[in-house]
Amino acid sequence: MADPVASPHAALAAWLGHLADERRSSPRTVSAYRDCVNPYLAFLQQHRGGALSLADLGDVSAAELRAYLAFRRQGDHPLAARSLSQGLSAIRAFHGYLDRRLSIPNAAIGLVRGPKVRPGAPRPVSEDQAQSLIEEAGFDSDRSEWEIARDEALLTLLWGCGLRISEALSLTVADVPLAPSVRILGKGGKTRLVPVLPAVREALDAYAAVQPFVLQAADQIFRAPRGGPLSPRHAQALMQRLRGRLGLSDRATPHALRHSFATHLLGAGADLRSIQELLGHASLSTTQRYTAVDAAGLMAAYGKAHPRA
Image (cartoon, rainbow, N blue to C red; front, top):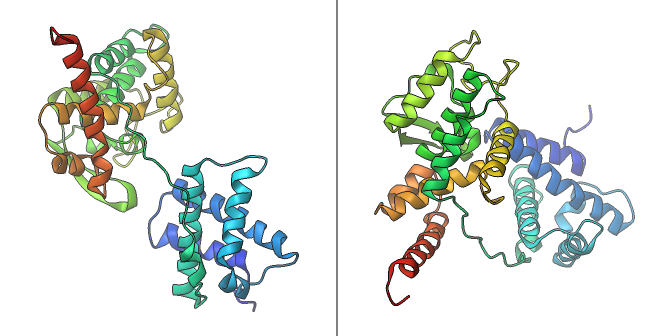
């Protein structure tokens, strides 16, 4: 019987299986890693002019990896610095798996530095804009009563609890009515407790009372018009429609409501550590980006209010 990891692509498949089954990575994360490593293996095979063996991955040089990054930066579909950096991280993680599980180390991979990526500041909507988005969802004459209640509940949940859209859509029938705090399973399989405001609980209860489907306790509470689970694409389309009516910029996305949750808490005096816990950020440095947004808002308010501005 052939060795199940006798080739680079078999090793890639084994690594992706490890991520999905042992590390509990999301399907989207697994797909992203696959999309990063597959072009790398294809480049190596073309660069070396022949079939690539599993052992060949142990002697990939730093120069070859730099050549691959240059190729992706200048090819038919050039990648931005952030995408290149993410691709390099995936390649390093793949080689780490080869070292740990298949005894194929490669020290040269660690010598390659990715492009410098300047983290962008979060782009929240204002409190008034967030409130207007929720109110506008309630005036959608093209939708049924339960769909309107669903959209209001979803937007209120995103803004009121700072959830990622995938986290909000994963709530089940058994989670409703929401407790004073709800346990959320976030990125990397990490759980966190998020307080639930009365307005959030009331909006979700109102939707649950009018949604027309017979659901089991384990079913996702947010449903599409035909009864299937609601997709993130619906939330994106909803925000696109609402921001068009309100004249808001393209920054008004579902994720912008999560950013708004953080910046509004920061502006009201919440400390960064608490916001980090509520958002489920692994690093405080990620949460610190919100200080720049809040400072910008403070200076804008100063410019409007100070008599000498």
